[in-house]
Image (cartoon, rainbow, N blue to C red; front, top):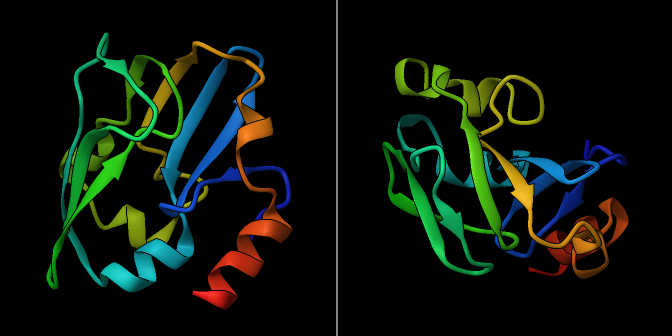
Length: 126
């Protein structure tokens, strides 16, 4: 089930936008492809993000995958729970396992992202 209230990237990340802030995480599709997550590399608070650039990584028993910034902005908070419980990305990708909170450089970023329906279609075609 793809939550309707979120926005998505073709790199399988989601954003929950609230004003000029957004939570960022990986989608259920992404965690299924990764398999059991064993480590998450998080950026420091205060890091500047540039859309499309790497900001961290997720390591699973199968592979290491880069995380790509879905937008320009500043990391204002990281989900430090993931340092001790990376498996939350498998168990709760849309709720407990958000990765970073970003202050958006462009609050209109949603226009550049995929809706739930567009993301579902993108995954079906991939």
